[in-house]
Every structure is written in C-alpha cells, then in structure tokens.
Length: 448
Image (cartoon, helix red, strand yellow):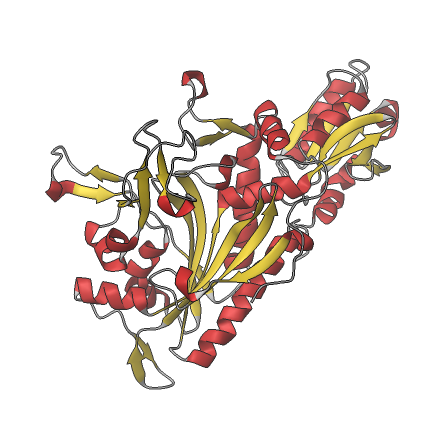
C-alpha cells in the first residue's frame, strides 16, 4: 500500500547544492577531516548542526518515550559479543553484491548497474561477489580471529540482547517498547547525496513487544506507521512530500514479514526516511538458540509463557535532519531584499532566540547581554551587534532562529523589548520579565 503521490520532483527554491553550501557556510555540517581533503561519506556537525541534531533526538525521545507509559529507554554498547551478529543473521545476510571495473578500478553495487559495462568508463566488469557491510576490528592487543569484533550496524540487537534484563528489572507488561538512540556503522559502497547515506550515522529505534497474535500484530503495525508519519508532519515536513510505501515480498529483510517505508521527496526523488517493520519473534528466537537463554515472557493473564513478537520503527537521525532542513529552506523578499530563511518548526530550531542591541552605546549592549543571560537559562540563544539591524535579522533568518529580541531606546526607559517573528517579520512589544513565558508559549513547549 502506498499513499498516492504523483509528484516525482520537488517544487520550490531548494536544491541539494544550495543546502550543502548553506550548511558549510553557517556551521551546520562540515566534511570530516576537511583540512586533509575529507573522508568519504563522513561528516562533522558544527555548532548549529549539533543543536539541530540534539533537538531532533529530543523531539523523538519526548514523544516515543517521555510522554508514554508503555516505552522505556536503553543505551546499549556499540561493541556486542560477536555471536550477537551470528544469531541476528547479519554475518550471513548483511551483504551487497559488488562488481569492479577492470579498466578504471572503480567498485559498484551490482544491483545498481544497468547492463554489463562500467557506468563510468564503459570497461569490462568483474563477476559479482558478496561484500559484508559490517566494519570489523579487534578487541585486545592481538589482531587475530579470536579477538574479532564488529561495530554494530544497527542498535536493535542491543535491545533484544537486553530483553530479559528489562523484563526482570522493570516489571513491564505487554505490550511495551524499548527505545534507544545511538551510533551505527555500515561499510556502504554507494554513498551519495550528502548526509542521506553515510558510513557512520545515528539511529533512533524502538522495539515494541506484543502478544504473538496476527490481529494484535496488524493493529500495532498500522498504529506505528500512522504515529510515525504524523510525527514527521508535526515537526515540519510537508504532507505532500511524504508517502507510505509497503515493501514487496522480494525486498523484505531476512527478519521481516512486512515493512512499510515512510518515504520523503528529496531533490533527487523519493527515498526512504523511516522504516516500520514486523520482526515477529525472529530476533528473540535466534538469540535464545545461540545463547541457551530462555528469553520468554510469562503472561499472567493468559498463564502462558512465550516469546513476544515485535514491531520496529527505525529512523536515522542524520536522514531526518536532512529532510527537516530541506523542507525548512525557503527564499523570499523582505523590505525589497532577498533572503534565505530556514522555516524550522520552533522546537527544532538550533537557536530559539537572538538578542540584539539597536545601538552600540547608551547602555544598550550591557542590557542586551543581561537579557541574553536570562534567556539562556531556558533557550539556546545568540547575540549579535555587528551591522545594521536588518542585516542581523537576515543572518538569523538564514539559520532558522524563530524569534529576535531587540533592545532599543524605549527599553532603557521602561524595560520593554520588541519580539520579532522570523516568518511574518512582525514585531510585538513585551516586558522583559514576561519574555520567558511568552517564548515558551510561542515555541510550543508543553503544547503536546
């Protein structure tokens, strides 16, 4: 099942090139090891990027864990026992078919090549061979097979390995979920489109454990597909840039009996944003078999013991950031001057409020610093006194700051300030003492 979406190309001002340039120029995302020419498909998040990333994770955590009574949190280690990946099937199934060009020596995924010649130089290609996507390293001083470990390719297995620990310590009752946010690593061969596909990335995953019943599974599967779709819209993605796409049988992962992708319309076309999968009891069954542990749940009401089935919503932080930035990007004209404006939903904006003294004299800078110090205890803030006030507004619009506080002549007389709205550019006057409450209401904290 797919949502009807005839559009295949985005309309509007944003292109990937424009966004990449903005991210570099304004300290959102930098190429890793930039001074050495970079390192393929790895990125660093700058001062504004880390704030945006933190806000995306916080928005996910608040609605997936904090606001609910049926989901708990976990933070499992990046290194897991090597047998974890044998049991999960990653060592056997987590592979891509690769071919090499005999002429230019470039490597490609065989399933992405049309025809039997190199797409770059037209040279002859080697036969396809399977390539495991997990990064391998060694634990301890000796580099041998006995000390081989892997950087995790997903966070989910740490949740399954801790299933019994959670059940034994938290007195949980089905249905319940366990969620975590953490780094994952995949030795991707095809990396492209900025932070859409990278080798080091962060995931937000939740395993929702339910009774092993097809009707129960279908109910929660549809619930989580809808819940996650609506979350993206709530935090700023345009509904006509989103669709649900259910996987065909031939593309299902080895653990899944059904998967729906929430896809986003990127500048390069439709692509996966988030996946919601029916994992059944595959993972608990496999880990029980490999470890010799029971890994069952005793249902007090049914007086029965069984391994629960699982519904998994899984979202990449970096990919979510890319979507939010693309749909926030806009260009318009204010006071006969073109501007770039990032129309972030206020809760996601890297900086919530900027503070400006109108003049660099008359005590205004000192007052502005005091106002910023007060606001900084509640919100991420910026201070700017360089250039005309219009130019300063434009700088903050470009990074998506939703509100600006200006200290002017009247402030020095009655302790009131102007509060400017990024999107409408309108200004209202408020007492300094009311700013925290006013901003909390405008930003939307507590509105959920």
